[in-house]
Image (cartoon, rainbow, N blue to C red):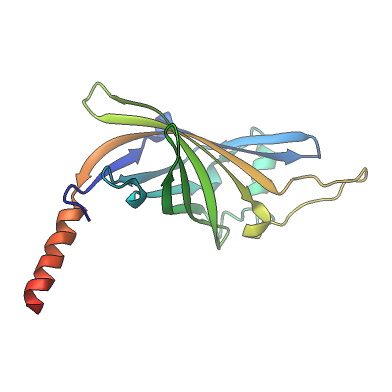
Length: 200
């Protein structure tokens, strides 16, 4: 690794939003968001593909604007938040595209199952706040097949079709703040030099 190391950027939950939508009763949509979630990005400014991202979501904080529906989604018939209170995403690859866009691939752990998912990330703004801390905003989009995570609940309609679709569309406005400088590169280099000296 290079000698510069990585930068730690933390999600600012008070200025970020994680939303979702899915088809409901054939033609309409259910939309909602999670009130509690967070994570961090270990950004490598010299080689972006080495960047690592972790995000956690408190599934019990789901809010679709209907208390009865939220209670059902939290129940054992669906998310089963008593047994699986959190979802977690851990990136495995970051590939840069054009115009500030990147494709982030990673493992999503949800409902006791881990699957690869792919997200599109678009950089929207960077600046330094009043406290002198660098900040950035990203727009994140993706899709999750709920059936792949064992979320099978549904009902057939008398007129044909099903109550809830399988594809969950994800969209997030993520504001991150740089909180620390982590010089992992120097540590790795020092360990390698020490090991080489011992072998020599």
